[in-house]
Image (cartoon, rainbow, N blue to C red; front, side, top):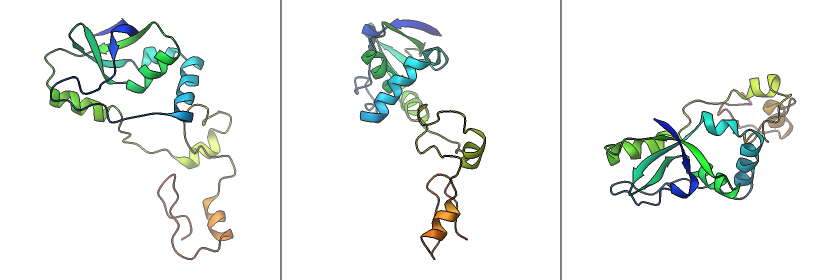
Length: 161
């Protein structure tokens, strides 16, 4: 079930649920500021990507969305949209949700981003290492006169075969 919950009732996962380690993710400095700007620019995303919370002792522990909660607190939000898990959810399932909520299974197609997404501020939207329209890793490898294989840090492919 989804409901709006006052910020004062939300807690980050600090290991207070027996059998569930504390949240292994962190955010700081420029990435934290970028997240805050992102929320300010498009607050509707919070409704589309709610926090995942577990009820405990009259409060709610955030299982998914701890960084968004921190940003919302810094932005003085009064409440957050949340998906509320059942209090019967086992700790092993909570742990699985914590990790799976942050795993990126897919990969970015940097060629499409570099050629078809040039009119959008991708780095402002949080896409680290967004490429400009002239990104050519093969040319970079050739200019450096590199003989061994060079792996593109963005797609993982060999760029100088």
